[in-house]
Length: 392
Image (cartoon, rainbow, N blue to C red):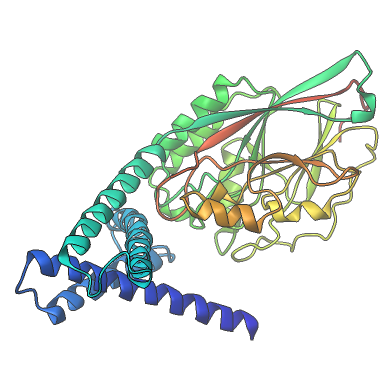
């Protein structure tokens, strides 16, 4: 019942913001077009909003009979519209506070309304253009992680170079051009091991425009010990088996609550997602039974950073994504408040594992990045030299 009430509250707020935005835009346009009919304006405005939301929602349904270019335009339009909602309502709030504190006379004069409208237009345009351009770029973040901290005084240390990639969201927007940039960044890092920490797909494998080329790009990743993946919440649903088959054909080994030993030195674990959007075969296990390899450092790929509490001293490092670090300002403030850590490198407790959360290499929904970045994480892992006699 509480969840239903929360959803209703959020929808009420959302549609209230839409109505407030329409009112402000009408006031601005009325100053320019004196004979603007309110009924005509609000009909066109309502139609525009419904079109954006319908194309975005229906276009993401399997077998949607909407041209791909229209779906892509809908994603971009949604990003612009979200910034329109935020910017216009922020300015409306400032005008209201100005009236309340008597900095602005009431009724509000055109000399205040028109400059506010121009400012809103400039802000929305600037944020949208910057966000769209920034989302086409791929950056690199670098980390050095020391495992087995009780061995700090040991002079002889082993190392492993890991490239962490998450949240590609291949499908509706992210295609071969962007994946080629990601692969180029990964190969430039010369990793020993590549970890794909979930959400490789955007929930629908059949939206891939050129699957053969995408497989070719994934196979072109150069890593001494190979490419491994865990599942994200979007790597699920009726096409789950096709997604796993796609990755396998692309040379990626998918770990589904499974563990492998990498070069007799590290135990790598891959988890299923804790809240998939649809099925992922067998339900995620409460805990993964690790092979007889207690002497090895344990690295876990778990898509969602909220799962960090599941791991204790038996785990050395957890690699996650999912948050996108909010992707678009100000949503990064929300993810930062919601997750223990929505981005970066941290250690939650003295006895717990270290955790690295990447902002992801792709985008979900609006293909915009504002105050965040697409990235791969280069991780240099240092640990005491140990070995295991058998490969698992």
